[in-house]
Image (cartoon, rainbow, N blue to C red):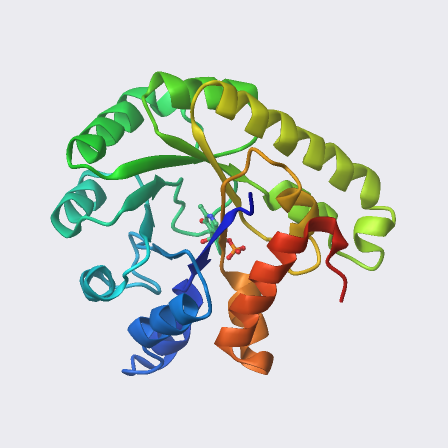
Length: 254
Ligand code: PXP
C-alpha cells in the first residue's frame, strides 16, 4: 500500500514571519495541500516560535479535515498546548534553540522519564503519539518501552548522502544505500514491535522513491522540498508530484 503523505507547512509560516504579515496564510496552504491529496498536515510548534504560532495550531485544528500532526519538544508547555488543542497526532522531537532545523532524532534513553511522562499524558488525551528517532535498534526499543504508538525514522543521514554532484548514483551511493538499509531494518523492527512507522527529513522528489519502497513505512512527513518546489510550480502541483514520487517508488523519473 502507498504510504500516506503529511505535508509540513512550517515554511509557509516562515515566509509570513519574515514580515510579521498576515500572508501567506497557513490555513489556505493546508486547504490547498488537502485538495491536492495530502493525507495530513504537519506543523512544528517550536519553543522559539520562529514560524508556527500558537494561534496557527488553534486555527489549523479547526480547518484541517484530514489529519493534523504537531511536532513539539517534550516540555510541559508543549504537552499542555497539545492537550488543549487536540491535534490527531503529536510527534515528539528534540529541539535545540540554535539549530537551523531538527538535527537528528530524539535520544530517548537518557530522557526516558520525561518522554514516558509526555507519551502517557498525550495518549490519555486520545492523541496518537509518535517519537522522531534515528533508525537505531536501541532507540526503537526505548520507544516501545515508553509506550509510543509510532516512530518516525529520521531520514536526514540518507537524504544527506543523496545530495551533491553525484547524488544517489555517484560517490554518495554507497553511503545512501547503507542508510537505506538502516531505515529498512529499523522500519521492520519497529513494525515487529507493533509500532506504526513514519519517516521524514530531507526527502525530495529525487530521493523519496527508494525510501517509499520500504513497505513497513506507512507515512511520510515532508516539508522543505514541497514548499521549495511550490515557489516554481505552485503548491498544488508540488504536493501532487510528491504523492506521485511516493506512489511510483524507484520507478519515479524526472
Ligand atoms: N519530520 C520531522 C520530525 C521534522 O522535524 C521535519 C522538519 O520539520 C520533517 C519531518 C520534515 O523535514 P523536511 O522539511 O526536510 O522535509
